[in-house]
Structure formats: structure tokens, C-alpha cells
Amino acid sequence: MNDQVSGLRPPTPARGDLPATRHCLRCRTAFMSEGFGERICKRCKAQTSWKSAIPSGDGGSRRRSSR
Ligand SMILES: [Zn+2]
Image (cartoon, rainbow, N blue to C red; front, side, top):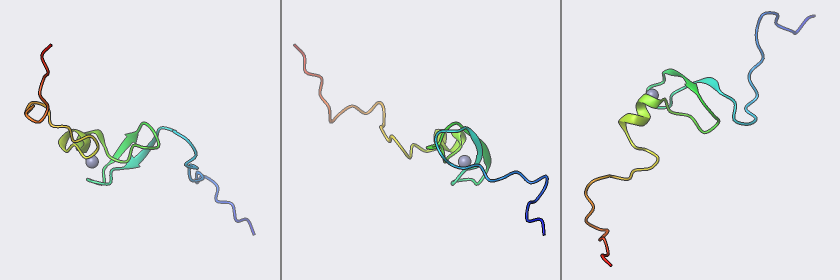
């Protein structure tokens, strides 16, 4: 018996930062992942700041100390 499936590519071993087509965890859309840490498409990333939620503009908490 030949257990090998010809024509079918073996699953890419997630071992390192290899660019591959992954599915976004948000919209489930296949996108080109640049690295291992890329789990969300750029579109969703741009829409919602899930990683670095640093609101720019309203600088009230941090005061600028004038010399
Ligand atoms: Zn997405």
C-alpha cells in the first residue's frame, strides 16, 4: 500500500518565520503572512489596534516638561 499521496504537498512545518498564506483570525481571510507572528491580515490590523493600542493625539496624561 502506498500511503504517500502524490500531488499533495506536505503541511508546512511552522518552524521559524516563514512567509506563508495563512487565514486571518478575525475575518478568516487568506492573507500573506510575513512571519510567524502574523496571524491577522493587515486589513484587520489597520482597522483595530489589537496589539499596540496607543491612541495618538489625546496627550493629556503625559505632560511635556519644559526645561
Ligand atoms: Zn482579517
